Image (cartoon, rainbow, N blue to C red; front, side, top):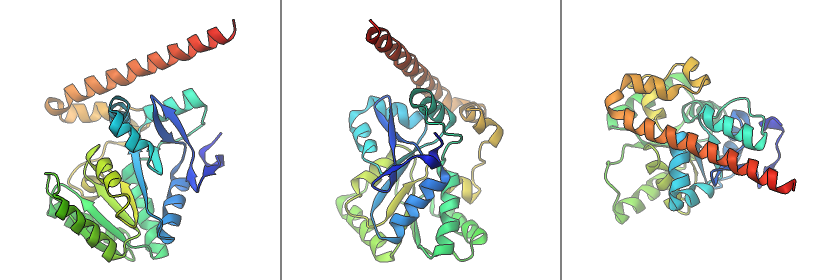
Length: 269
């Protein structure tokens, strides 16, 4: 069944488990509509984009997994996650929902509907400045009511309270968080009861849309080879991560298939 034909629970897309992690069965249109509706109605929410790296991490870390399962949307980011949903749950999803692409869709819709946005993340203040310039060039009516590039260290309790106050007093309906996974997901979860907006974790979108980092070509992304393109670009930093994460993902797929086959065989006896 296509994502746009799937019913929702409490206004949010339904979810299906992959390795114990609840992933939303959704597409760009449904995800954007749900987020913008919450933003306009001032309903706090948290949104993540689940790629292979985050999926494996959350399936192995019970604390992170429980946090991620409480998110209002945990969108399928990356073809392997979409393939897993289609294989194990016959969801019929025809595309992924990536953080960078959804961010642009939300910015366009926010500009047209008057929803204010806040930018929290980025590797430096310069990156955020360039991001703001590019977003305003694309969407002249977009109301960016605040921005900041936080320190790489953990925030003190006082700093955390001050961030919440700045965001809430800005009147933002959507907060884009670009801290990298799983740091951004933990931040969103920890502040879900304080920030009165929809927090959308978008990963490397700040770097992509600011122009400081080149995005993987669509040909590679469509074929689930984004990791290979990145590995070729930065082998020394990424080879161990991708070998470990991809191997664990494939192993978990094999175990899940074997378990389902055994359950099917047992039920027929």
